[in-house]
Length: 156
Image (cartoon, rainbow, N blue to C red; front, side):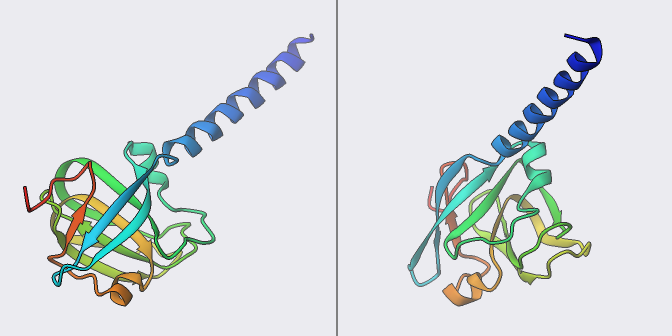
């Protein structure tokens, strides 16, 4: 094989591995429950964004998201969090979650493809993104409880 051909093959192999790794970074799926103040439970299938790379990618470049689907961003610490909608093509509700699993605040129907910073009102250790308008539709509000194996819960 010629040197140029080996370099070309190496480039495409590297590119494939990078794309595969990026896709894998957000491919883990879990189940999450939001319990509202009246005790109603809403269940979501969520992709998990656990690494810095997965959190940076988020739901960018998605054209659709099912009504009971979302992405859960889990951070190693509780801090003020800010999200933007760069390269995000669908409106999202951005739900900021405290360390104990309670919802700190919700940014409803964040406008797609904008660079506006949307922030937590306090320290958050996780963020849930679901289709825009879904939180209001289901009556999900600040103070409600989010349950997932990677989150603490107020009932502990």
